[in-house]
Amino acid sequence: MIAELQTAISRVPSRKARLKGLTQVESVKIKVERAALLFRGAPVAVGASLLNGAIVTAVAWKNIAHDVLFVWAGAVLAIALVRGGLWLRFRLGGLSARNLSNFARWHVTFMALNGAVWGALAPIFAVHGVVGHAFLAFVIAGMTATSIVSSGASWRAVLAFNVPALTPLAITYALTMSANGAAIAAVIVFYGVGSAYLALAIQRMIDRSILLHTKNDKLLSVLRRRIDETHIAEQRFRALVESSLDVTIIFSPEGRIIYASPSVEKALGVPAWGLLGRTTKQLVHPDDMPLFRAVGEKSLSQLGEVKPLPHVCMRGADDGAYVALGGRLTNMLYVPGVEGFVFSGGRLEGAGATRHIHAAE
Image (cartoon, rainbow, N blue to C red; front, side, top):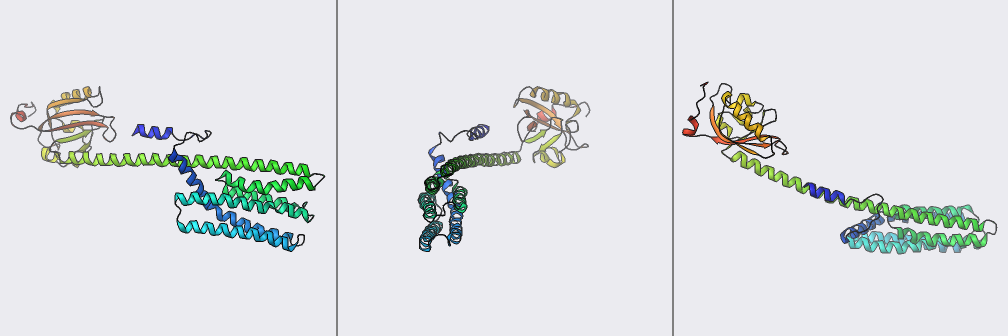
């Protein structure tokens, strides 16, 4: 179990490490999870496109020809409706790995189309002489930021929107504004590069998170399996011990009884729970204590070492009669769930039960 856990932990990706050397299963897992994130973010992108389209139409109504504005707004609306219908179709069709992968491909395509429509605003504003309107840069920047928020799981999806949206804006400013056009265009280019880097960083962070989650699932699976196996083994051991005719008693390192099998009732005349908490001094006959302690000290030398106890007298109650037992003492101090000395044996019969006569008796 420890070896499996160490192996699982050692394969957890480093924060700084790039995702290299992934197995085919891990690569597919990451792609599917990224596609699922794109699917969940698609309604946000569609809603933002519709809302910003309505705002642009209202703000530009007095400055831009209405037929041009209607064509542009109609294109925004049409793409939004198609994207919304595509999202609904895949949702109703089931979110299988194949469907999510297909949705991701369509999503990137429509992000590019939507970016081209929003990028067309720059030449439209330029033709109508309002390219210097601060609203234009503001709305394009807002849409590119929305693309990062809604599609940050896919660097390609963000680039598919930002490149066709920002490129016409930079070219338009560079060609139509003689004073500060070049400087504004350079700022737009830097903004595009920065947003692309941010999208790439977000995707890598998401990939690491997905892979880490996958590794954690594997680790939890190992833990659950081992816990189940341990529980089954414990039940099997307990069933064997409790159904055995042999007496099994576990002593703590301080010499107190922490477990007694049900068979002690037949051997010593008291129920198993009646022995719990009693000490070796109360249980073992004084004449046998030196031998019992000597065997216990010898068994300390090695974990799991077994020392024979051919004859030892024990009693269940302080005023009860001593019973001759024979068995062995095993050192299990460092065994989880035991953590003590285990006496296992049975009642001596015939000559073996009477050959040792204590002076006190």
